Length: 411
Image (tube, rainbow, N blue to C red):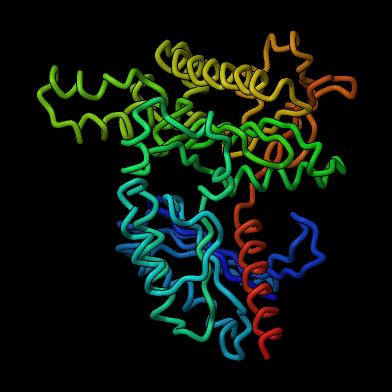
């Protein structure tokens, strides 16, 4: 089966065409074509390539994710992907599934309306996905089935002690207020690749995964399941991030609104868009720029990096306690995959729990898989570059294959 995957960010659209079947091990799927459109909403940069060596790179005005999706589909059409129904299904990443979508789901009008109804919980991400889904359905029609794969699914069976907020249960139930968790597709990928790399049975998988990029989250995983994660009702909770504050005193938004003479919505926007690495450093949300500035004596940049690493280290300690110990800690995401310096700082002085780092391995593992801890470390440390498209393609394939078998049984 050939699956087209769309993954929308707040100003980006990534897509891949992936060849997959029942026996394909995670991470070894055939990548037939790929592309990315950046800076959507202004002068966008398009980069497309396929396995035959055909490339396209150009700058074009792109107003929204719908037009970006149509551009991607037009390029795939020029390669003949739709002439003979060569694409068997389309998988869309959707950040927030809310209380209703706990599994990958076939998209129809009713499902699309339900996704739109919960978009306020992840406005920066669900809305772009909705635009992409609508554009793909209009362009491709009904002949190619589409599946929504939700970031929240991986965390949907967390134990109540982890997913509940300590607020009146009646209010929580009335408004569906609990810790949904995010980056689930990324954490799921790290689990699957770890199992393949180490030949670990799923029931013995006891690890901590770290998705560290512009958005950041940590997850404690036992038996292949998420038993706790750092993000909550929205992606604002948890670790310090590029522009998000992460955990703060719950009274802080109201306090800022009162003292600064701004609305509560403006105070929440400040915590989402002007805090984190950007807010502390006063100059950038890009970890590479901050490390360079720190090396030149910028004290605010140094503080931003120190706070970032400290808060990740604290979360590792908390999840070691929640798990009763772990066999491995895994770094993924743009920072986790590409910054040996940040990884080293996070893991410094963690030998008390058996977590030590091989600095040579660490420095040589940039943007690629590998173990960066010594052979005899009690808690191993790995770098696993995340490929969310693989999980989306696998979930799409699984659902479409199950539906196909059901139809055969009914004949």
